[in-house]
Image (tube, rainbow, N blue to C red; front, side):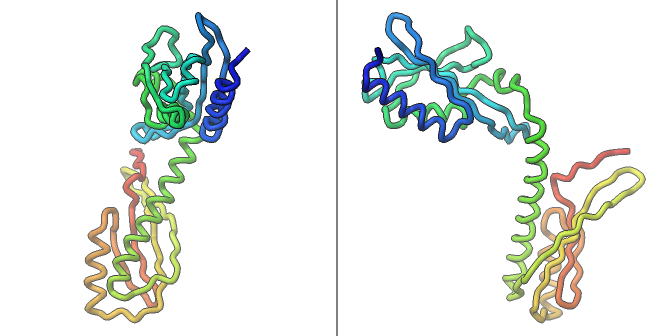
Amino acid sequence: MINPEVKSRINKVDFELKQVFENVFIKEKYYKTGYFEVSANKVVYLKESREYKRLEAKVIINQPDLLQEQVKWSYSTNPLVENTIWLDRVSPIEDLSKDIINIVEERRLNEDYIFNVEAIVDMVNEDASFDEEVEQKTKIDVISDVLNSFSVEVKSHNVLVVSNESAFSTASDRIITLNHNSDIKISDMFKIESQINALEGVNWTVFKEGFIEISWTPSNEEISLK
């Protein structure tokens, strides 16, 4: 029968892990003394490879150690391989769950394991779209800051995707339209145009009555050669 204090503490770990991980499994096992085998996984984004992968933290905690304020525990550096290296850790009981979560979130795992886990393709595609939205928003914010420095306030904006085809490549540019209600001095127009055109990816800037148009090619746009 499990010590009530041990049961209370492992239940706390279980609860805290489930706040972050999608799947948490805790098995009670015996070898000399009772111990818990904890397996928890979640999908993480790998910035280096621009992929989503489901990574796992596989942990062993001896039951007697859960009664200590400094808990000894071990985790597998490669949950896919049975005879892999296990690393020993010591955590304050209040930080135990956080340190287990840290294994996955900080990728404290064998590189071969991370490489061999299959990527989740659907989420990779979603992320590509999300990245473009973030970059687009950032570009508009930067341009708006330039205009604000000349006391030109942007009231609204619109982004149009246009195809730019040639005999060698096909790319998609963005036409950013920024609406404003300010009277821009001619002398300021040249300064604004110079600063905006100096931004990465900006092709040209045109002033029209009540709005400004900027042609921009995103830096992460894929160019496919024909």
